[in-house]
Length: 271
Image (cartoon, rainbow, N blue to C red):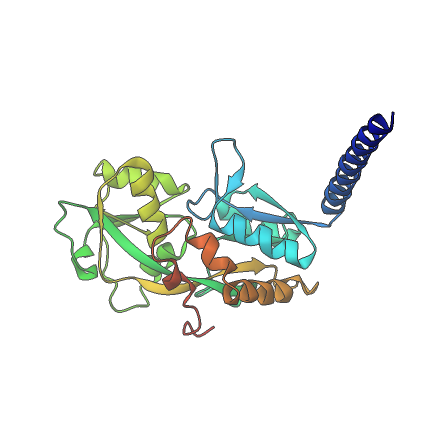
């Protein structure tokens, strides 16, 4: 009988331990779901933000935002938006912030910014057999960009003396279309973030050649409405910097990009 009581006692202790652990996990889950929600707007832009095989948002920006807002006491909801309407959406409060490989250059007065948290090269890509090797070779050529992106402004405004006059600048609503246009020969070149071009080539086994001379090196940031005075932007900027310093950002970026350290060299960008 004594032996049976000992066994019963061990079983009871085990049941209590499992029960208590279950309660603890339930409490943690409840605590997470009770956190205020930050709505982050982005478009489909691998490797920064895209839907995985299960239809769940993932990518560099999704992971960085999830970790940063968690440290700040928020949970994040990533929503796919019409990129052309991003400014009016954040200003109306439909979304709290914009985070999708978003260049700060030339937009510093349009938003309240957290960052830069990543350094990115805006570049031009051509087909491998193209006779275009420099930016000056684009004179009179046709080039495609995603609408409302930084490259569109660079070629429209031509404030940089290195930028030649194109034959046609074609602005398309979706990222993938610019590469389709290039692959089919509808345009001679495309311009975008280098990481986006590299990711597209990996995903679709495409063979493009990236020009050595970049259009610009820009800082990537998180954009909030100009009149957003909640203090979340400033807290976000500080948290992203802490993540850069403690190695968290490096661990996230290296999952998606080669030579991840170069993307964290933001100190000399001048913002």
